[in-house]
Amino acid sequence: MDGLYHSLRAGVFFDPHQGFPMSEDDVRQALKTVEDPEAGMSVLDLGLVYGIALEPGKVRVEMTMTSPACPASDYIVDEAAAAIRAVAPAGTDVEVRLVWEPPWTPERMSAEAQQRFGWT
Amino acid sequence: MDAGAHERGGAAALRLDVSPRLRLPLLVLGFVSLVFGVAGGLARFSSLSIPGTAVALHGPLMVSAFFGTVISLERAAALDRLWAYAAPLCAGLGGILLLLGFPVTGFALMALAAAIFTLCNVLVIQRQASLETVTLLAGALAWLAGNIVLFEGGAAVPWWVAFFALTIGGERLELSRYLKRPPWVRRTFGLLVLLLVLLPVFPRALGLVLIALAAWLFAFDLARVTIRQDRLPRYVAACLLAGYFWLGLGGVLMALSTGYDAALHAIFVGFVFSMVFGHAPVILPAVLGVRFPYHAVLYLPLLVLHLSLAIRVFVSALLGAWGNAAAIALFIVTAVVLVTTFDPRQGERARSR
Image (cartoon, rainbow over all chains, first blue to last red; front, side, top):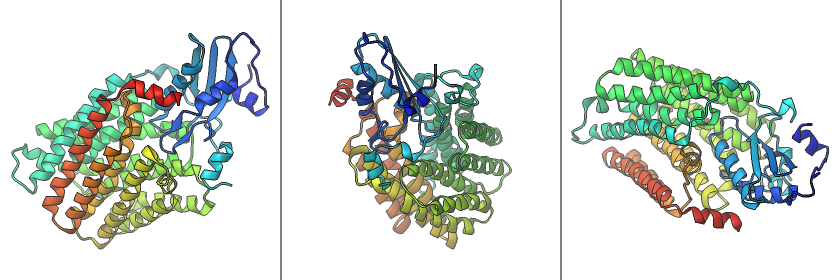
């Protein structure tokens, strides 16, 4: 399977299993409730989420942190998984993986985040 | 998933998850040194019946045994490698040995803790090489240098000051990446890192660099934006910005080579403890797996900390020192109450909003 990151960049949206009642947008909405506690903004707006993949009964997310030494990373990953589980069908296997490649860059931030932090 | 997305340098065989419950005893070990270290500091002004070692070794107990345990535990939790936990273990045990009257063995363990912590930071650079991660490594090396100097009976304090300046500075540089800054801002920070590593041998010059670092942090830190938000981000920002004031003042006093107690405590209490107060609600959930909900009452110990430090520096060292200790005790009580009375259903409601 191709990398989630590359799939996302290529605009590939895959929800091949119509029987699974959850969309990528549902996952994104869930991740909007998970904040970087220091920035007071969601991990989605901050561009920390690299990829979302849906399979029947399974949600997989790849995300990063601005700092590889960040002690809160496990906590934020757990929060992200909990937020997805809260809206996913019961019994869904939710996996949130922390990756360090490619490194995070500010261009990944949403328009709202870029505006708040002075980029636009 | 593609290979590039996988973590680099991940020695899977060495990966062993240490559950948050097992991290608690390490933190408790560090807190033993905090309690005796603070009491030892107070005993320098008042008559307290505590072991003479706690009085004589207040500095190593606070810096290498308490902060050393907490910071290296934090890093071990981030790395998720079993061997990394040897750093907080050695730092914490080093403090206990100092208290029991075995300073040489204790100092040796502290140096070992710093060496392991340095290796942890090499691993961080393997994950991602950047000015930020190099700064953290420089901080670890400064702690190691300080602990070796201590072992040999020299002046460790300037190295420890550099340890905190680099460790906190590196983390703040990381977060300031959210903000748009001209390239020279980053290059200036790089220059400060170089000076912080080189100048502990000239404490007065180090003071000047601390003034520059405080000005950099005050001007370019994310806290300048988040202070305008609310709840936790604003509280953390308040802790940091107040801390930068004391870092700058500590730098001035060091540069003038005057007010030893005031200079050191401006840095260690005003800058470092303020940062700890701010980050405990962010870090404790990650390290201990507990919920630490934000509450405005957190501003109370913060206020006591900074007011008592002002008294310590400008009015009375004795009165201020007791106030500093009261602020730390008040913060711990507040934290324990907030963590233990947290109702998980509140969290669920917050999420469903």
